[in-house]
Image 1 (tube, one colour):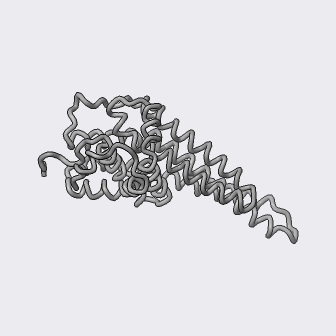
Image 2 (spheres, rainbow, N blue to C red; image 1 turned 120 degrees about the vertical axis):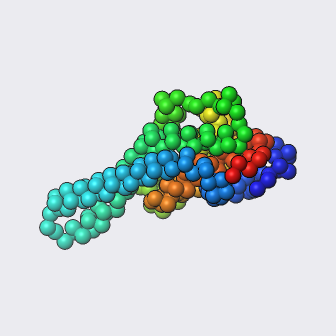
Image 3 (cartoon, rainbow, N blue to C red; image 1 turned 120 degrees about the horizontal axis):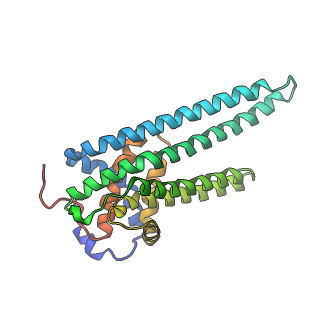
Length: 264
């Protein structure tokens, strides 16, 4: 799809249009890979890594939940109020298990998936005409540090959300709104930052760029955060969202989002 007309006039955020464009990144990336299937070879490793991380996090979540529940039930006395305590304990253990699993996922994702996603973004940039001398592959340690910053933010957000849920109704609503916004912001800035990292843009500058193009960032982050909740299939479309983020970043920066000549 040719966005040349949009590129010439893209000087400031378009709010709703940019938000929708951000949400469409996973689908855009999938269509792009289907159109140029030779690029799938670079996405396979990222996909397998993401699936492995997601599966490992699910196993940890299940283990924490079942182990904690068994220990909790074993300590309950025989009394009329036990059923009430069981329900309260079940909800608390589910929240604990989900929180632990999410933290594990974010940390593992930061250490392993960020590197694979960066490699995929690098190959897509070259395919779209970027010269190797324009790009610089980020060191593995640098990628981990930047990714752990994002994971740390999300962990703090999730801790705050758990505390807000203590307040009946109002706290839950506030937690949902604040949590949704922050997850979308952090994940959007992280994915939009992959193609910028390749051009040597530092973390603080990437954050400023994400704030400037906030609707696009939130749209991208919304779809990425939502895909985190879908096992396996979500991992696949998170991978295509990396490709979509490259295309989105190029459109924002008035760069072509399709090759000059079709290599296929």
